[in-house]
Amino acid sequence: MNTLSDYILARNIIITHYIKESGKEIEHIAPGFSTLHEERLIEELCTTKASSLYLHILDSIKGIVLACRADR
Image (spheres, rainbow, N blue to C red):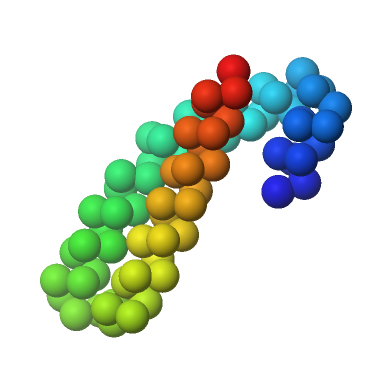
């Protein structure tokens, strides 16, 4: 999170570019993480307790990406 806070404080163009590119990559690969997770649940390789935590982490990451995109 230092990168995001550095961007907010300094408005550094290089850091801004890095955050935007990372966000695009996350948006591209996140649906795959969700799909693979669903498959693990179906195969009973993941517990429901861990499932909730994993989904909250994914949602938080997506929220950070959306917040960065909205700041453009």
